[in-house]
Image 1 (cartoon, rainbow, N blue to C red):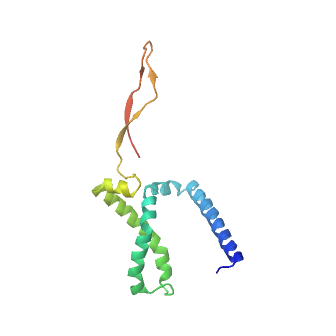
Image 2 (tube, helix red, strand yellow; image 1 turned 90 degrees about the horizontal axis):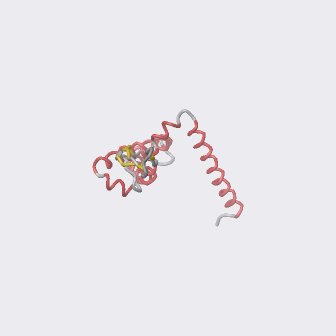
Image 3 (tube, one colour; image 1 turned 90 degrees about the vertical axis):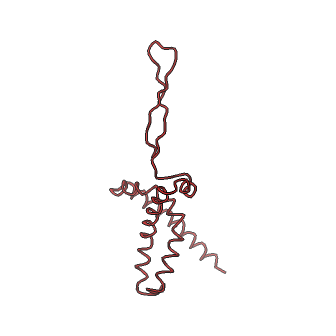
Length: 143
């Protein structure tokens, strides 16, 4: 069983790691790459849901060809697997959005990539001398 001190150190490390990741996320969002990262946002939940499966499949293909954790090529797998998972999430989401948007909506918490038009009510406008208030609608793209 883990000692209390070791457990406290690991918990402290986890808490500090969360703070560091949040700090890095805010710094990146405010940097020049922020707009580029913002365009990747629609894919993040799908990536979160699929990354373990993708990592496992890649690892099962990688290990027989290039070796396990202690093989010289492991750092390549470690760096490339997240990139491949993100790429597959983007491609997979686009295919599902095209072929089965309803299924994508179920898998992805109601979010699809297809931009659908919807009517949005404008603020109420009173016509001069009129006793009624008009609420014109305009069509915008939901995004």
